[in-house]
Image 1: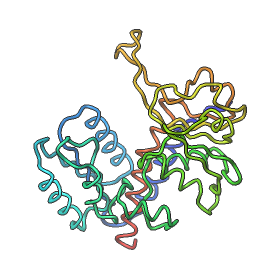
Image 2: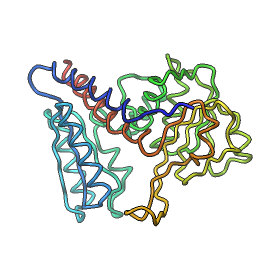
Image 3: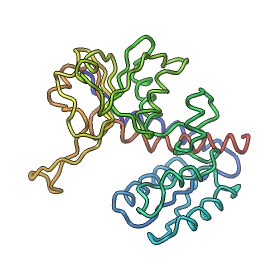
Length: 291
């Protein structure tokens, strides 16, 4: 069993981007990070993104509207960033307050600056295999992990557990694409799937993105499977200072001995998401400036 080191792959991408950005003359690529309110997880995520941008040499603008901001006011803020030629990428950190329609906010971000890849236009471009679009960061990171770990999906049965717009649907579309590294045969499973273990046992590559702690057990996989565990779940653990431990959607102790390759949690897919956000920002800069 080979443990796939997501931290190392993410660091490799950051190093490549740092060299690329360092060679850019004049204005550097710029990402605007919008965080509404003081949700502790959001504060931590935005700090990570700001730190990564600084390491690569990107400019980042941190915008912190109050939790009381109205949807109309947030739209106006996004419109201002859409029209600002000095901003290449825009990320609105989720979750947003309950009085704001998250999907409507994602759609408000200009497709040309939607480095999170959630705008309807960019999801459509993924389906059409249009390389000018932006792929959501976690699915893009999964494809990078597979490619850089020597896993070619051509002819392989890829089973995706989960059908979210953030991971499940886009990663299934990416695995299906007619291009090097992809060309997989894809099955998407979800809460209404019957005989789930019978399907997951057919997987050559299993992408677990169902959001349920340690859901995938040893009886659900075949020997030699490649497993990408996207889940990040908090499980109570009194032995930890925090009172919890992080675990994936896969029961790692029993499943990992059967896998040929597997991503751990933490340290697998997680670090890739921020790296791919930065890669999308550099891509947005090049598409918008022609440099």
